[in-house]
Image 1 (tube, one colour):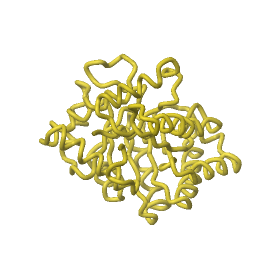
Image 2: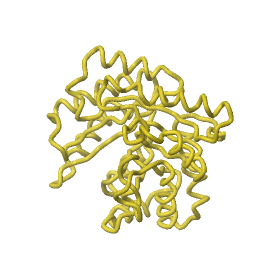
Image 3: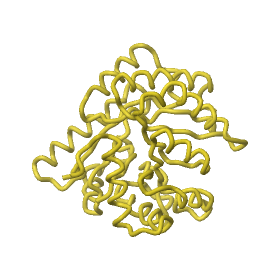
Image 4: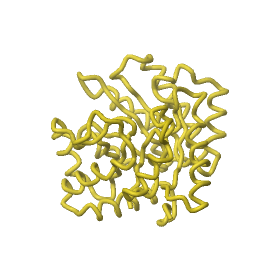
Length: 279
């Protein structure tokens, strides 16, 4: 069984077939999904939790669905909206047992959506809330085309405000180099690969993935985006995480079953969940 460690299940693109989409994931062997709670802004952080409760309730009645977990956080480009009320709302969500992670939070310098200093301040304030609630974090980091500026700022921030917690987290949709992956692993993070790992032009990323230890990786969809090959261009969904897992298995010279087992164990270890979390 596989874990999709990052999916935006509250996307309006699933409005017409959300339950059917989750049934397809279950039928494909996906035992659990981490539903990301950023919505379209801080006022929608609770949507992932709402979906967890809705569909986990159906699971308890015997419906074939993956177990859902939730996160909550403020996306980098929404950090200008952070105030004391938003942080209080985040804190209350992280107190809920289904909300196992704070995220996706981080830095995005690729799109000019918000000032970089505001993003860094917003990240620090959320790290403080996550640390107090002892929740691992799901990090989004994307730099400019010119360099690794966002990654340098990210690691400086994490070294100062997060490393000492030993809580770790997930480097979501990893797209940097081996140096950044190694630094993440050294800080207790898992490196998560999405459907772009399968793209023809992603050989540099595959070269990085091939060097990582089996106990340091996860797979995800980032659904509804980043659909794996050969269905790129279509709406992504958690069932397709199997394709990324197969690619990663080939890179690490293991079977798809070994990737499924290892990534499930990695996810459970990070979040202190039982090994049979999807049962």
